[in-house]
Length: 207
Image (cartoon, rainbow, N blue to C red):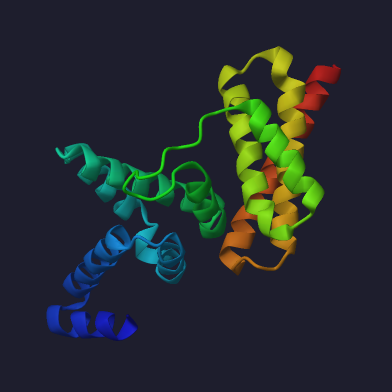
């Protein structure tokens, strides 16, 4: 890949060569059906694949696409890039796998069933397998999302408890040492933010 980039820059100039190589990268990302390979590509080429320009470009393509299946595929990649930018690649890949399946939409997203999610979470927690931590984090975030959207005061302590548990799960994930340094730093920052918000909610309710 680096050899291809150098060759393109020599042949087309640095700016045109870099842009052409970025186009080749995004085409490779879109056409690759393996989530594992997408993740490897995103880690290796976070710049430019996770840049503002790349995200805006794919959003524009999705909006302009007339074919419904192609538009769905592009929107799926928009979601993947957004998750990578906010959670790190490893958690983003786990989230896509858990909630959306393949990019072509061949799998249906899981129906939101709080009871089933809580049961799954308890089962995964009891098993104690570190490999399930990304899925545990995804379940906690899924449970947290409607409570955050509702914004009702009576749910605030439940939100705080979920935030604390999600922060603890993310910290455990970082401590496994399986994440690349950049992703670990982003996830640690997210965990700290969740803990601070949970503490603020509890203090507000106590007053």
